[in-house]
Image 1 (spheres, rainbow, N blue to C red):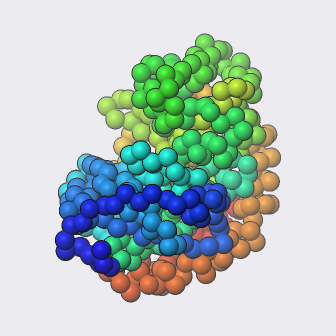
Image 2 (cartoon, helix red, strand yellow; image 1 turned 90 degrees about the vertical axis):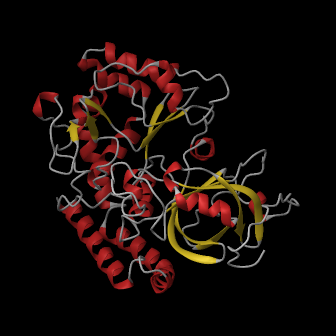
Length: 434
């Protein structure tokens, strides 16, 4: 198989590791080393690559190879990934609310499944790699900076770094390599690490009652094949449902790490993660939130909210630059007597987050919120610490950014990128002072 071999198909080989490969010996800290910019290469047979590019929205895995620093992991599963926002302008279909058609952008977010088939070996203790395109983020910093700010305040959050990606020998561009939230994430972040991870399901629905058992099971991302119990999250929701509101703060203290959740909320609102857990989108009168995970510790029965999908953070700080994601309410406030309301021409109806009983309970911890904000602004969000990170990371990825713009017509130009970095710093300065 030769470089840029896209003319003929070839059989993806099964490669058995010898045992002395670095990816078997080193931990995931090597992948997420903030001091390094790594290059990853995927090799995909021509027919398989055509399957991916002809219909990326199906998120269908194909077999391929991962090559990293002289080691080849084969086979692995490879697919494109993304939500509606990730496909805007990048597939040929004209309805961006229902993306469809062939791939028309150079970059799309990709997922590499290391534990493909019967493979038991991990890749630096990871089962999956996620390469996020950053197509909606001209600063190329939202994910890496956002997640680092959560982690700086002791909130469990994915690690993220930049990475260069090649496909069949050709440089595709610069991506955000962001940690998968799965059982490997749980093992890295929690001593009590055998619990359930759920994606995008809340302890209570908008009517103030828990979801069905089947809905929680469908949202599971760990322990799915082990006859799992969803009693912890559902019982937590039921306790909130049954309680008088005056009792809710105590239930929160009993079932969550209060410093962790208030730090998460404060950061979320400061960096305007408006497409996250506190934006309840409404369709047909039914409202729900997304872009978050829950982890529940099985022994101490604590629940942890985990942030996700930060590509649209920061942009609504000064102006409402994204009319779809903008949250109208200030933290703790409600609108329209807790009925869905319109938020503009482009935005679907939304529902005030604090109409949710659990969220309203969090909002009652006003003093702790202010204390966390002061610590954040004087520490991780200070001008010196923010600029130190952004300047270091910019120097790290400048050459890779320039290289991509020299090759691909739709890659961001260096001058535009510099302007976006300046805008990001201005947005952060505004948030720091308002």
